[in-house]
Image 1 (tube, rainbow, N blue to C red):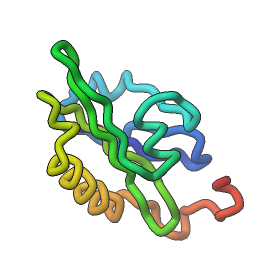
Image 2: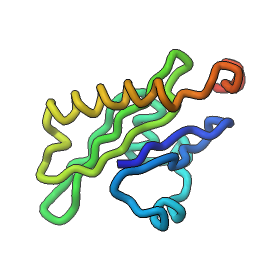
Image 3: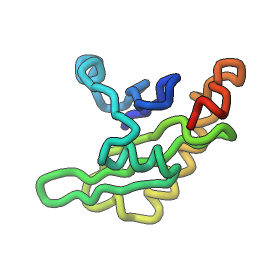
Length: 119
């Protein structure tokens, strides 16, 4: 799992924390531009869960938005095996976990950008 948080300009997601990835892998992860054509950027832009179907050779993925009263501040991405990314229970658990996580990683109100600067 990787938690991706928007930078102050809200133009790019940056990896903030992970489970299952080494510090070396995290250090090599780059940012994801807001307009990128992948599930993480799509979930961030839409504030809706996205899935990537796996196959016999690659894992699938769930990407759940981290939504706060100020909007979507990032995403939680998780690699999934055996088609579990399509399972409603897995999606529900990811949604609940992302909602709880959003309350912990949300920037304090004083650090938030004005609404006009977020567009």
